[in-house]
Length: 294
Image 1 (tube, rainbow, N blue to C red):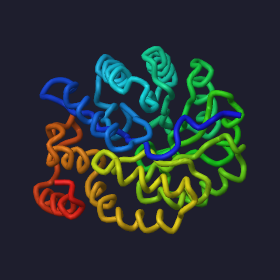
Image 2: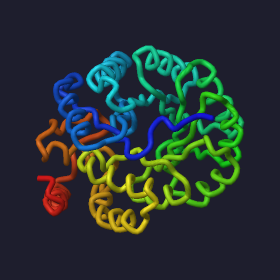
Image 3: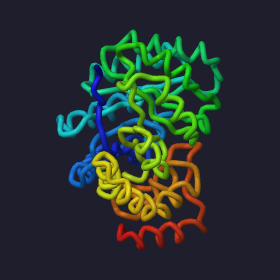
Image 4: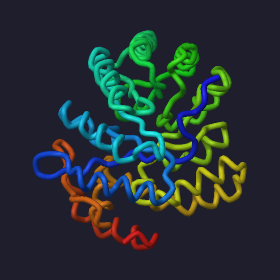
């Protein structure tokens, strides 16, 4: 029986940039902030990490830097998805060689594969590596949605360990739990659904909010894992305004702006991502101040 790569709160860590490359010293500061505040795993080069706008060399160096700096203290999971199966395999193999503990593979975007195509894509990636693979279902960004039946088919592969569910569809989560074996694990991909998904058997969250509130997200998932859903519900409600503010604009614009306000990195984005709208900045700062983050 497969064990979960992690339980609790994994940060989908932002990638700090300079004007022309990745800001590796700032990345290490972000990693230290996470490790000092109870984050249970690091997910690098995902959606929040703006991996889609990074070069192959930047992605690999960022993954390697993260693995070396974390040095086994918590699991490191690399985002290696692509809309080309061949590219996803190459990224996954090279991330595995860099020493990551697992791979987060988003559904191919733009292509809009059928469910049969999605199953074949994921099987090809999982066949090519010996690391645990976490599927990533985020139809709002990819244009395609995995079904519970596709999950059930993929759960038969020994290297496919579960899914980051960011569809916002709790009925899908329930059906997945019904159709899939116990060791096909579910992690919430939406901060505001952490407690509900964990109540349905989820093992944690891959979190945007943890970039700025790692301790609070860890405490939320810890309460769920202990079965204290009364406390978890209170914490989920406490974090509601923060989670909402971090999606006033498309991710990762608000969270990287927040990190800049907190002094952890520059507010530099890769086009087509761009700076936050001027009218939203004071609103965001006010929310951060209300949580004692700035």
